[in-house]
Length: 400
Image (tube, rainbow, N blue to C red):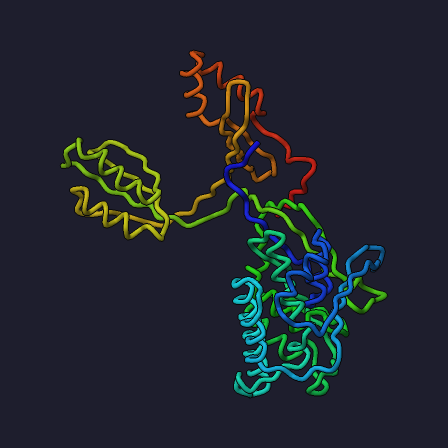
């Protein structure tokens, strides 16, 4: 069975106890990436003063991956320019270079605002060290290895209290973290520790599409990344859910355009309809003269109006905005005793799936085989599974 439309692979960061760079990378590795493969890809950074150690730990009974990036020797503080130069001279993929550069620029802007310095004068401390570079580039490499197209997360939790930094004692969440997360959903916890680090915040603020995870979301893999410190009260873990989104649909705005045409040559109507159909609209035609009801997306509104005036004799239109609900659907090619047929899967709000063979394929087979169309449809529906089906038991559907 070959699916003609491939759903987008999604990575959902469930930051119930916070997020840091090493936790994010560890959780992605826990989804099935072999460490030697990651090391080979990271070798393209051409940075050699570090080593990576992977281990299994248990936090509150949950088995997880812990990752330690150990830096050899003492490092000097790096400026944004120095970090960008490391990325530019590396052999890592160009798209990963670009994303990593954007993440570090975001960090530099945050540091610049916090300390009142020009961006070029900002020198990173913890977030400019080799382990932070490895964490950020490693996460980008891991997401690409896993085939992830879109990233989402829970609202990021913020801790309280103070933390000792190279600049001295800082309040939590750190000023840099707060700046980085401007515009990104967060939640206050009151827990006396750093939950979301500047590196973790930068990864989510730069990569995530937000917290509105498409529903239903089909979970295929789960990974846990452990933080370096353990807690008696809360598991210091980051959970990653890897899977696909197959939406049952939702509300979307469309414009309704209506016009009455009573003085146009009927022979011109088919061509006029073809021109309107170029903009993916749906038409209903009634008769008092010719009445056109057109559903059109806002992005195509101007083109459709222009086409109406250009290709018809109308001198005025009416329009208003409505909402509609559309069920998401996917098409699969299925091998049957009568041949290959496209089967449409429609996901209902209940989480169940309606399957139906495509009419055009059934019609083609009826003509080729010399069989009644009704018999062809019944046989194919019986073989492919008709009507309402429960979600596949080997996948988990998360519904809102």
